[in-house]
Length: 157
Image (cartoon, rainbow, N blue to C red; front, side, top):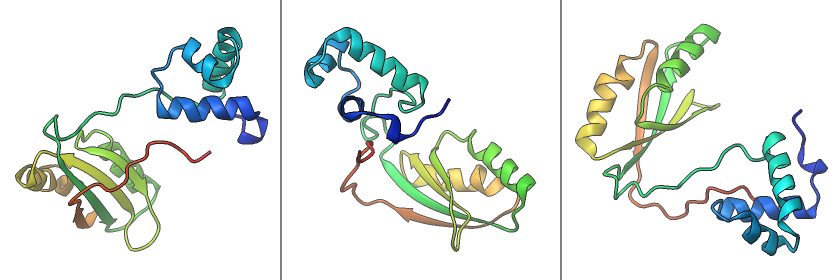
């Protein structure tokens, strides 16, 4: 059963805020931070997971160190759109490893992609052999990130 934020108390919210800053904390460290003992904190954390407030735990990697330093936001406009075309586009996009995020948007473009590659040559290859090969893609507009100013993985609670 999916719950909403109204079902959370102040301690639940504090646990979520702390975990999104550092999900690697032990139950004891988390309990100390919210002034409870480990057992109720463990139970609260498991409940928050079951209810879908915590979707998963991830490690944030350094793309530069992993030779994925080129970040591109790519706007995609389809020739036409209906449920079948959209589902096919999504199916294809989810299989492309360079696409790290994909959003269906309103406005001049249908989709906004966040793409990571090692350099411009590889991005060109991605456009020609992967994105450009998807049927019904009408146009692509790329915005190249020169520097990342703010990157926050958390949600403002």
